[in-house]
Image (cartoon, rainbow, N blue to C red):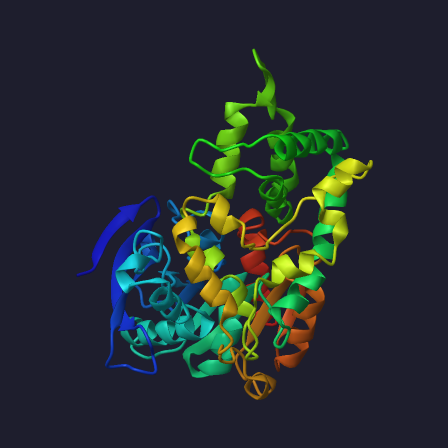
Length: 433
């Protein structure tokens, strides 16, 4: 049963759907999906076109907006919006250390999670569309990984799309996970260099914290083991519009003086554990590298292996000389499943997924080359999370796709630049600019 209620300026309806776990076996096990329908309060009774929003990640549920926040404000001028929690996220049959044991042991869990990639998400969307629109095509807005899913949508079920809008999410059509990370580490280094140029005092602060972690065993209040590699992974923040400033504020009050000498402040530790823990989105760590798997090769912890090719990220070597300690970015490593109590029970499952080599293709080059769906994509210049060169090559492979390349925003432009980013994309796809 659907339940409707109001927030300022909007009417919300909670909707639930059941879909096959394995879409190649429609009569088999089914899972539940959750989505929130949002419509402007003064248009609740009108027949409006639908816009489906696909969140970034993988592993994150859709935004929980209050009223007409961010890009949603612009979308509600034209659309009735469906905010979908992709399978395994939010309220859509969540996949966590608490729920996955219901599937059985690590082997059963890995087989289950192998069905949580973009191809399955697209099939979910098609099943939901049949219920929601009565079969009419809809507009899809894909942010980051949601954009990856949108390109899969154009490959697998373009008949379901009226329009496709992508922000920071044009994937390479053929790059292996290793190629993705070889392109990523130099971008990450550029972001760190820019951060230190903005906040030169952070060079010494990061070195002091790294040195402390190399000489002390630090366990955060939630049980997370804070190693120097975990500290470096806070560089994930540097790919967002305000991330450099937030990282600076975090570093400036890292230490306090205690009777035993300088120690990491409780306030610092609390902030760090909230930034590093995967308790709220474990699926991100479990299936992140699998989103690049489609050529019958295991991903095999590609980010960890490729990092060894960039010795400048070795904190111990940096501290042995006078080099700055470099932060890292959007990468998942085996040690995360040892350090993070939310991931520890899933270590063997993660190993099995990393060793898996039977990933089916996610994109159809021939179908994309003959695309007839209007598509517009925002490509952020020097995006830390999605390689710009990869994105532009893909843009050239999708017939009719129009790009808006900008350095005005970082990867989270849909959040920080909203509603202007969505307005610009709509103008681009409607040929108004």
